[in-house]
Length: 284
Image (cartoon, rainbow, N blue to C red; front, side):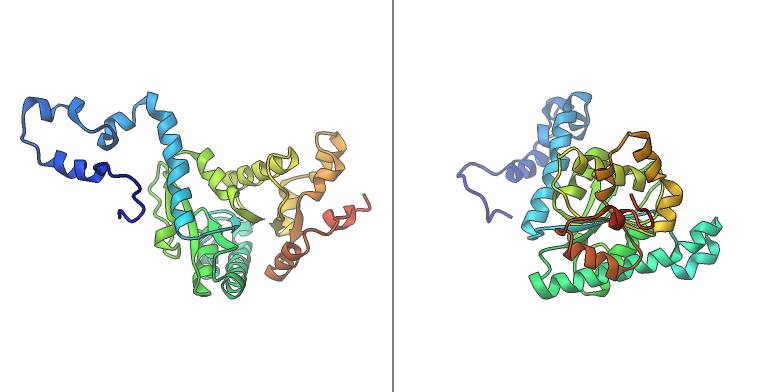
């Protein structure tokens, strides 16, 4: 589409089409003759990494801007968390028990999307996930249940992984660089909701907390679904007692159990947090 073209010069796409029809000669068949921006071998050279990084930053940014996505609600969580109907096939008892988190993630995404549609026409608080199965599927599915859009930020893995079927096709992106993908998760985030998961989920959670802790990102609600799971995985108080984090760092997140809990904290995040609020059951 040329509707935003602001110059009188020949369009690059026109030259792409012309180049495809040139006579076949030793010169035109040589890779050196290919247009640089249409030469995959050239673009994949080691020296072109800065260009590839820029492209991965730009493409989703431009397409989300064009789609009028103004803010997002990020949903992190494990790919192995099963659908309730598939819980009996889960590989561990813990995963079978986490099937309820799939349903809570789906319900939370539906409620967020319904509110977004009613209040902003679906422009604010658009659900974004990693685009895969498990909790990610539940988030995209909940948004779809509400009749709204959702974003999927997939990544190329050694084993093939297609986006789940509930991601809005126009907002389904694929990445090579984990770092750029994580940047896209957070750059529009109005809230970050973290469900049980593995290494990837932990990486995303702690990068978020680090950016907020160090002032590299504005403070947004960081909500951890399933307090029992998260306390069994991370000894938050041990970090504090060791002095590797401060007491105030424990106020950067809250535990929630239900979609309604999360929505309430998102609405009231501006209120001062107390130690008792941040770490339930502790006097601090």
